[in-house]
Every structure is written in C-alpha cells, then in structure tokens.
Amino acid sequence: MKEIIITCCLALTSLCCYSQTQTGGIRPGEIWPDDKGIHVNAHGGGMLYADGTYYWFGEFKSDTTSVALDGVTCYSSRDLVHWKNEGIAMPVMPVGSYSDIESGCILERPKVVYNKKTNKYVMWFHLELKGKGYAAARVGVAVSDKVTGPYRFVHSYRPCAGFWPENMPEEYRSLQVKADDFKEWWTPEWRKAVEEGLFVRRDMEGGQMSRDMTIYVDDDGKAYHIYSSEENLTLQIAELTDDYQSHTGRYIRIFPGGHNEAPAIFKKDGTYFMITSGCTGWAPNEARMFSAPSIWGPWKQHPNPCQGEDAELTFHSQSTFIFPIAGKKDAFVFMADRWTPKHPSDARYIWLPILFENGLPVLRWMDTWTPE
Ligand code: DGJ
Image 1: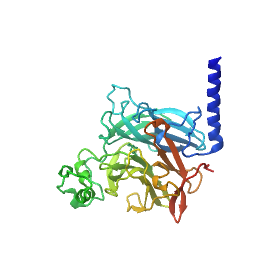
Image 2: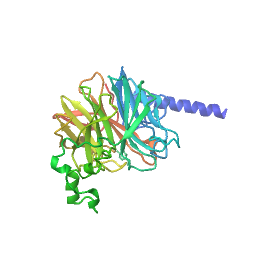
Image 3: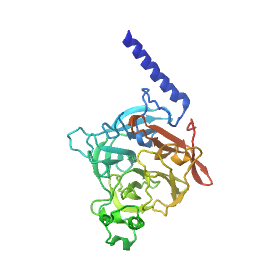
Image 4: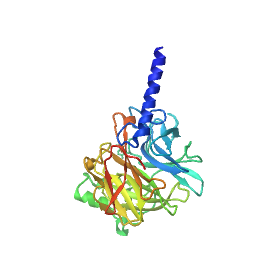
C-alpha cells in the first residue's frame, strides 16, 4: 500500500512539473522538467536544429561534483518548451581506461554541428584530463552518424600547434621575453608582454591553450572554433577543416589580455555579434559584447548588452550559446547558465530572447516568455 501511495505521488509530481512547462513557456531560472519530470541536465550547452527538431547538448552534472562522471546529454524538442531526454549522447570512458575522456575528467561546453560533406554530426568540447585540474586546456572532438549519438571520441589536443596567429605582428614573433621572466602577473610590463604574445610564443610548439569554447558554422559552410586561450587572457578564433574535425592552422587573437570566457556568437544582417563573460570561476559577472563585419575582424567592443536589475551580473548567469529560432526572422535565443557549484545538477538555465535597439543586441529579464 505504502509503495502504491509513493508511486502515485511521484507520478503526480512529474505530471505537475511537466504540465508546468507546458503552460509556462520558457521560465529562466526555474526548474525545467523534462518528459520524465526531471530537471534538464544539459549545462554549458549548445543547440542544433535539424528537420524541425531542436537538439540541446550539454554537460551532465552530478549532485556533488562538476567533473564528468557520465558524459554529454542530449534533449530534443520541437517547440523549445517541452524537452525529451534522449539520454547520454557521448559517454565518458570507464575509470581505468586511461582514455582522454576517462570518467572524472572535466568535460565542458559541448557543441554539436552537422557536416554536410561527411554527413556526420561533430561534437566539440572543452576537455581537461582527469586529475590535472584545468592544466591540460585541450579541445576534444567526437563524431556520430546519428544526431542523438552515440558519439565516438576522435581526439583531443591544443589547437594550432606550429602556427602563428594571422594578426600577430611579425616583430612579436621573435621577442625573447618569456613567461618565466615575470615573478608577478598583472603588472603593466606583464600586460604589455601578454598583448605582445607572451603565451602564444610559449605554446607555439605544443598548441594554444583552449578552455571555454563555442563552434560557429557560417553561411558559406566554413566552421570556426572560438575559445579562451593564453591562460584565459585572450580569445582566439580558429578555422576548422572541411570535415569539421580538426583545425586548419589559420587563426587570430582578439582582445589580448581582455580575460574573456564563455563566448557565444551569432550573425545578423552580415554583422557578427559575440557575447562573453569575464573570468570569475562559477560566480557571475558582467557580460561583454563585441561585433565585427567579418569573423576575422576587426572586432570592436560595445557596452554590456544586459539592461535592468542585475544587468551587471548577467542576471546571475554566464553565456553559453546563441541560436536562431527556426522560421522567424531576426529571432535569436541567448542561452546562459546560472551555476550552482555546491549542487551542480541543480544549475538553472537563463534563456532570453535577444532584442535589438539602435542596431545592437539587448537582453532584459523576463520571468516567462514563449518563442512565439
Ligand atoms: C567558468 C567557465 O566558464 C566554466 O565553464 C567553468 O570552467 C568554470 N569557470 C570553472 O570554474
């Protein structure tokens, strides 16, 4: 009898939760129950639209730790409100496998893109090797024939080894000043050295550091990897090969020493807009916004796109991805995470529609909204 009552209560709870999303539209900061009534577990995620369905990929987080114990999850929806749990799209490897993606590694900000030439789905993610904190600073790649997976791990590495950034002046390439020469960071001399490529030179042989990241596929089918590099001090934008599984070696640095994380990008009327955060760990900070007429720049900075209460903390969240709403002109969704490092699986999703004022993107808090 007791079991029957408990089962009935659980069924009712999940029904209530599910109907809450059905009637409530998109509710930033609330619990978002999936088709089983469980809060969506797809953090630091990205979105792929295919054949009338949105596929949301993200980090599966446990209740107690942010390291990857399971892998990357996938959820699907036709309306951005009701989400079906499609399970683990890319599992991490068992403990003792010594794989780059062994359970217990740090695997963050997965993004999936579709490659027309190979007819494969390609997943990119920030990877830190197990037990090494955030020292590895690598990017990982996995592929699948099916959008929901399973994705097969291909490789992980630091990008652009042996290549100079296209926009790094010739004279900076041969400077002799080294990272070890500085006992103290953040001094004016150190800042100047960072701007002049201190860490690019240090990492020339082994590849550039790659942490927070996103992938952008342009209208002409070219894909780009945008990532926090050089000890999180500088963003780099690098071109991917035609199969989207490696780097070509063509890349630029933007805002050297600007300390940007969490890049999210979109294009409107030929202008590329990028929203990022500063670097304060899991704690929120003020979003930054940039625009450029070409992915290769020149990039220029604009004021914080957030307006209203808590704008200076990005409404207590950090950007992760921006995607267009299918079939609607100039309708873009800003996806961000409100991290809860003490209870990682409980982190909330702050999704807001991007408004445009005087030609610039603007974000304002909304308790509830619908993609309509
Ligand atoms: C901020 C990053 O944006 C997150 O993805 C994560 O790496 C945390 N830092 C870790 O502190």
